[in-house]
Amino acid sequence: MKIKAIYWELLLEIKAIYKTIDCNRESILISHELKAQKSFSTSLPLNSIAIIRFNPAHLQADEFYDVAFADVFPKKVKKIFLLYLGYFLVNRAAEVPFTCVHIAQTIDGKIATPTGKSKWIGNHENLIHSHRIRALVDAILIGGNTFRIDKPQLNVRLVKGENPIKVIVANSTLALETLSTGKTLLMSSTDLDYGNLPAETEVIVVKNEDGWINSTKLLKELKKKGIHSVLIEGGSQTIRKFIEENTLSRIEFHIAPLLFGSGLNGIELEEINELSGAIHLKNPTYYKIGNAIMTVSNL
Image (cartoon, rainbow, N blue to C red):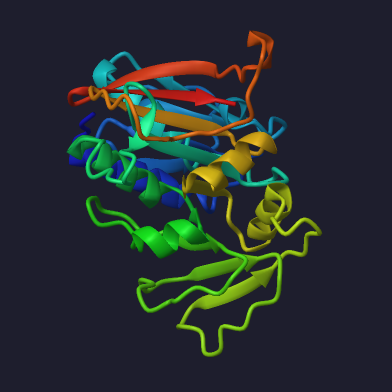
């Protein structure tokens, strides 16, 4: 799923404009030269190829804004353009941030072999897509075990854009020697002694009786920090909690043309006995990414 640099620059420009826009009064116009600017227009003028209008009364991301395109806007770009707008054009008045998960898996739903090998199930285009999401959201969240095992950098390297705030959820202290630079929030349900923390690192305690931070409480704390969109990168138990507690906004599956037959599942939920117990994904959209397919759905 390729996108020309000029359209990526436009998306970053729209993101910057949106941070200062008055959604009750203003819209965003895109000129024929692919430049974005604020406007009070509600309809598409002749000197523009697209307009983004906002409806603050709707808290859901897919109802909060709409985009009107002129006929000259490239059809091949339109679908991808709308996908990426969805990561940051979210209603800042919502009680909790927009959340999304992106999972690279085999065609039989495995994210790693039984021994934990997973590089690389997703192709290179998928990796670029993941970094685009990182560049567009406000924060990226992982669980403590994922940090300990994978030691991810959680930054933007493959595309132009700002690094997101790092959020690590762990109820025991972490060795932070491998933590990359940049603002980091360490979230826990208990008081932990980290001693001297790295620069730009903060510990946030969200008390909870059962030991796990309730995802709604966690997201409300992030909202207080000015975070309006979050990419949840793992691990599987962290993703499971957000699904079970109904706090996941969007889920993406990169389905690679690989068949393992055994291995680790990307999502593990409680068993169901009837089809009525299945989670129904809303408004699925499909994208070709190199030799793979990506599905994007709301929950």
